[in-house]
Length: 226
Image 1 (tube, rainbow, N blue to C red):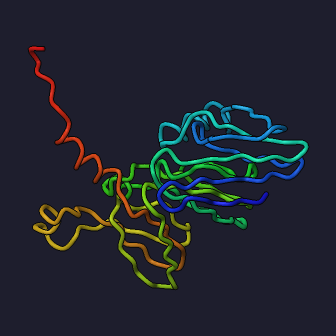
Image 2 (image 1 turned 45 degrees about the horizontal axis):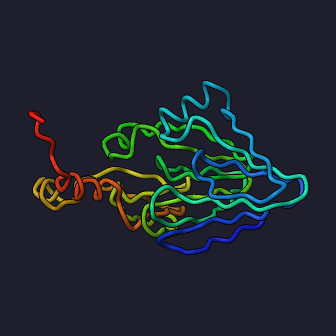
Image 3 (image 1 turned 45 degrees about the vertical axis):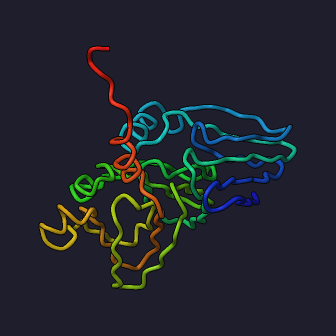
């Protein structure tokens, strides 16, 4: 499987060139196009219970699409928001992904949810994270551009919780306040996530929460009398 990513970082388009007999699994709604000779099968991967857990707890779609070809073909995928796409190759390890950032992967990659505990809940990223495990490529999407940070053993790095895309399971994390109570309440930052290496962390340059906080007050309000 060969991939190209065009129009980065604002309007990324992922093009997957599949050889004969290859397939790729993608989130529902991620497909842009596919060539002749490619077939699509929609299924609840992992069974009904597995898909329900991934959908309700992990924030991903209940059904997923598997694109396959016996002769070779092309599939293009894109994220739902204006943003970036990156590829990360797994070699028997695990990757933890925030809700909404998983876009596609090799069919051999196992998808599950991982309990994030109170740290994840109070960090604003949801109580569960999506966990991708196995060998093969995983494709991540974002709102805004994706920036990769590689942490060495014991190195610490702090990210606003709304800007996290994914991180390797080898990196530990703790959710903390920004400075004291005054900074937490009035700095506009609130809670942050401090990672400790080793491991890679991927972050996005824009935040959906920040977009909504800016947009909602500007929306026209409806008069209850109308």
